[in-house]
Length: 501
Image (cartoon, rainbow, N blue to C red; front, side, top):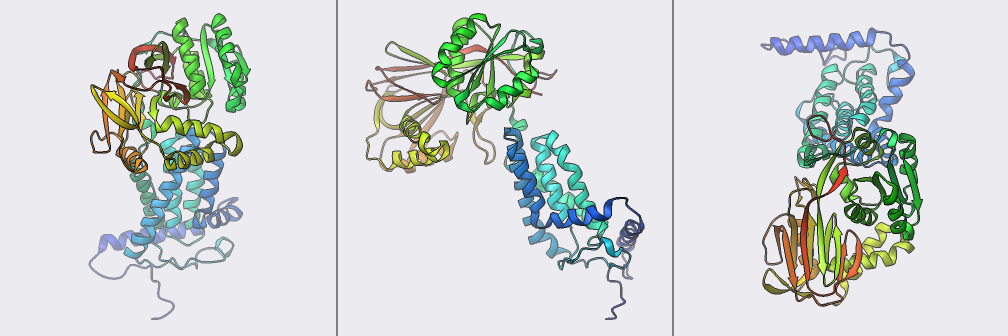
C-alpha cells in the first residue's frame, strides 16, 4: 500500500451515512488543528500527558481525600471506581471491537504534537473515557466537587483532539462510555443521596440566627478542632465549650442549664451522653459529627458543619426513635446499636490497644485476639427459647443494604429494633462472618434476624459484658430492650419538599 493513502478517508461503497459521518469527523478534526487557541499550546499537551495511566485522576482523588470530609472521600472513591470500570471496558472491548487508525498528523502544528505517540487503535478515546468516568463519579456523590473537576476533565478530552491523537468522535464515544461506567457503578453501589432517610416526622424547632442560643460541647479527644473552628466561623453567636473526654458529662450538664439548643461534637459515645441529657431536659439536640464512625449523624443526614448550620439557621428538624435497655436497676439508651457476646469483647480489646497502635490497627488486632480465644457462647432465653449465642445485635432502626454497599438505616423513626442473632456452635468466626455477609436475610442454621419493637432476654448471667453505641458496661440480670418512639428532637437540613438538601 502506498504511504500516501489516507486510512481515515471514507472508502467507496454503499454506506453513505457512515461515509458522511467520517467526512464530518475529519473536517472537525482539521478545523481544530487549524484554529489558534490562546494559551493552549503549553497547557493542553502537558495535561494530556499528565492523564496517562490515570495519574492525573489518582492525584485528584488524593487531593479530595485530603480534605477529610466524608462527602469528598466518598466522591474520590466513586470517581476511582468509575475510572477503573471505564478503563477495563475500553481496553477489553472498545479498542478491540473497532480498529480505527489514528489521525494523520499533517494538519496538526508540531508544537502541539505529543513527543511519544500512542500505538493503540483510535476508537474510542481511553483518556476521554477515564476523564468522564472520574468526573461523573465524583459529581454523582458530590455535585460541588464534580463542578470543580469537570473543567479539567473537559480539557483532557479536548486535548486528545488538539494534540492530534484522536478524532472528535473518538472523544465523544469515550466520554459517553466513561459516563456510562460511572452510572453502572452507581447501580452497584448507590450514592448516599439515593437512599437518604425520610425527613419525618418534622419537628418544630427554633431557628437560631448566627447560632444564638446554641451551646455546643466538643470532645477534643475526638479530634474536633477543625470542625469547631468552622462552626465558630459560621455561627458567631453560638457558644462552644471544648473539653477533655472525662469532662464531657459535667460540661453537658452545665450547657443544658443555659442552652436553648444543646449541641454536641464528638463520636457516637459522646453523642449518646448528650442525647440522654437532651431527653431528660426536653431540649432539641444539634449533632456535629466529630468521631471516627459517626453513625447517628451520618444516617441522620448531617455530615459536616455546612449541613448542621443550614438546619440551625433555618429551624429544620425531625423527631427520631431512641432505643432503651434495662437490666436490674440499670437503664441506658442507644442511638445506634446494642450488643452482647463477641462484639463487646472486641470493643474492650480495641480500647486496650488503640492508645498504643491507633484505632484501625487496634480493631484488626482485637478481632484476631477475640476470634482466636478459647471461649464459650453466652446463654440467654430469647423470645421464650433458651439457646447459646455468640452474639446478639440490636439496631435502633432497621439496617438496609443495597447492591454491595454496607448497611445503613433509611428511617430513624420506623419503630423497630433490628435484632440479629448468631447462634452458638462450632466455628464462631465462620458463623459471625456468614451473618455479616447475609445482611438482612432472616434465617440460617448459623444466624437469624427479626424486626420487633420490644425484646426481653432472660437467663443472662449478671456481669455479662454489653456494648451500646461503643460504650461498655455489665448486665445486672435479665434484659429488656424497647423503642422510645419519636422521643428525641434533632436538627437536620431539609428542603421545601421535606427531603434533605
